[in-house]
Length: 122
Image (tube, rainbow, N blue to C red; front, side, top):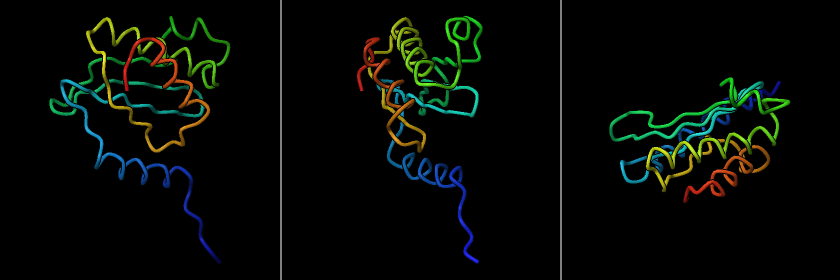
C-alpha cells in the first residue's frame, strides 16, 4: 500500500527549502506567517540578531474583539493591517515576506495585501 505524506509535513519541507534563500536583516527583516486551525500569527524577525521585532496574532484581545472568526480571510486581512501598523510604528518599512510554506492564495494573500496597504514594502 502506498503511504502518503501529510500536508503538514509537505508544508514544513517547503518552508525549510524557502528558508535557505530567505533571511531577515536589520534593514529588511522577515515577515513570517503561521496559520493554525483556529488562529493566525504574524511576526517580523531580524534573523541576524535572532529577535522578534513586532508580532501580532488573532489571539490578542484587541484583534479578536474586531473579528467574528479568527481563521478566515477577513481575519487574515485585518491581521495584515495590524502587523503593518505595528511595523510602521516601530520604524520598519521594508520586509522580506516568508509565507511559511503555505500556498500564496486566500488567507496568506489577504494578509500580504493588507500589510502592503498599511505601508509595508515587499
